[in-house]
Image 1: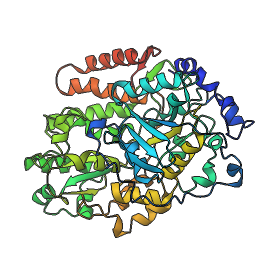
Image 2: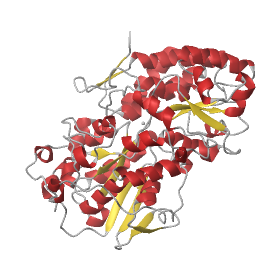
Image 3: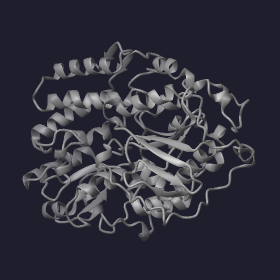
Length: 499
């Protein structure tokens, strides 16, 4: 994939020297050639178009003296094109960027106070559609008219390394944009800065999110089965997988399911992989980590034991959304903060306060939307201002946490939130979930990433879903994964399974 992208995006890397008004022309990082939400856009909770009225004044931290010198003086373009895979990025930017004056009813465009237009270009993540559309636009970046150039684009954790790659140079370094990660982003969690950096350790992407996962459970089911819905007491029953298995048996005895499906537990395993799917040393081979085969074994056992709802086959489908409703017999889901806000809130049809959070059986991180400035943008100053407002302004990050119950990428804000009643969630009946998010984050072990993560994650779940449902045997599921992954990525010639 890397060789393919290097050739197809070569035109983009040639633009680096031609960028107007950006500092660092002699900087080595400039001269070098550069979890979800996995949810479909239609299932993302839309924020009102007029939600900018309450946005705080821009109090973004002052840039350093070096970055001040990098302020862009060239005229900005008339159109800012922002590419994303769902409505989340648009909703968050319109909520906190004070220069947005209005947004169209259909959500496809916004107008800034200075008359500049933002065009929101959204394509679904599924089956690589978003990446294909983005790659097409980036490949045409050098010859595109100013109004058609990509200015900002989103990248998920599952494929961000493809776009931060220094050889591809699809995204500008933050320093060349006038952002100093050491000072302007000093309050961010280190792991998010590492994820947003290229192979030389130079940061090219940033995010307003950190995405530690928790267990979200039904209070009414907890009271009926366990006699209490207290998060601390329920946490004792979900403390690890062995304990969770005994808890699942108790739930089954009362007619309930522990989780909706085998897909719900996948991220707790995949986030703890020991190796990348594809390594730089062996770029034509997909290597399946042993912990993923543990997920297959455990999922089959749990499904056969009746701990999953057999009618729910995977995620992001109507059965899965129904499992979040009041008619469901599903006790819990495993989600980061964005999952509660964008998936559970719109699919729950009961009163607020029916759900609560506690610790998951294994700490995990799921997703994260990173924001990158496209090499060749004709709006570097606007792009910088938007990125700083969204990912560096503490007041804005506080606003996002309060209004969307997101765990934001500001350590001081999240530390304070954990003990502040003002951060209680209405959906969770006033419970403040930030202590549980913080506890999860403290013990997260991020799996090593590769450019193939999205395809591998999707296809291994699809292939073994057929096995779980009895449509194919185990060996056929492995064979189907091998076929599917080679079709998705023609440069892959081998799949290695753990012994």
